[in-house]
Amino acid sequence: MTAESPPVGVVGTGYWGKNLLRNFQALGALAALCESDAGLRAERAAAYDVPAYASLDALLRERAVEAVAIATPPATHGALARQALEAGRHVFVEKPLCLDLAEAQALDQLARQRGLTLMVGHLLLYHPAFVALRELLAAGRLGPLRYIYSNRASLGKIRREENALWSFAPHDVSMILQLSGLMPERVTCSGGAWLHPPVADTSLTHMTFPGGLQAHIFVSWLHPYKDHKLVVVGEDAMAVFDDVEAGEGKLRLYRHQVGWNGDIPAIDKAEAEPIPYGREEPLARECGHFLDCVRDGKRPLSDATEGRRVLAVLDACERALASGDAAAPA
Image (cartoon, rainbow, N blue to C red):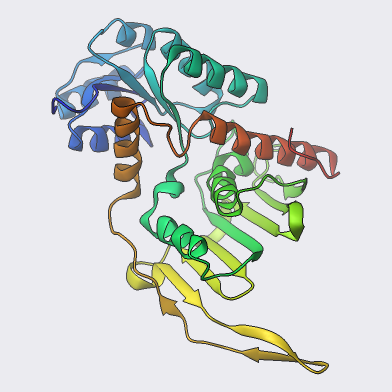
């Protein structure tokens, strides 16, 4: 561990937590881990040569740990984040921040009152290709936004405790909110549950924003192939962030021109232009950003306020999914 890296304890070392272990160790910040499964705890402790604890209570007694990174099931996020904040620790928590809007607001207030960093793991905001896409938009190369759509589909990972909306869509909601700089006024959502009703295996969300911007998100874990694609259509150009593609094909710009020749639609198609982007691992950037914010007292890009905005949209989606009626984010 370097002298500049705040010591971090990773809570939950399974499916995703193992990636946090790897990245915080590479950044010289891994100081401890917490894992309830005894066999996995012993395995991870041996692999990373750090103290291992069976509970967050035990980890928080280790005063050398300044921050915790939580990668446990979403239903536990709120309580664990509160426990760590009340113990005076900075907190990184995987998406979603929690499952309740009031709890999210309370966590945000608690972190502010204690002067602590509270950051949410909205990973794709840190993807170098998405960063380049935001720069395209900020530079005016797309023009005013018209609509955005996102597909996040694959075969698995199927869950019983949360539906596909909550499992997959936080990524897409966070990207769309970042690009638009707005909250939707109206949300509709439909879906289907076949494997473990009423847990939805698919969902289709449509969002209407102030000024006429439209966006939709399709998510599914019952899909024949992996499809992770964000399409952004502006008045002057269109961009595609295809996270399944590798290399130059991951981010492309299309300067198609669409207009009218009298009463006849006139379309002038252009070749796709690959857009350069950095090649750093998104999770490495995200973990490094958290450490920088803890060390320097900066507000994270995906802070608790941003996490609450994403949660408000997901909450509206869930209400629309259950009722069949449109809903507005709180």
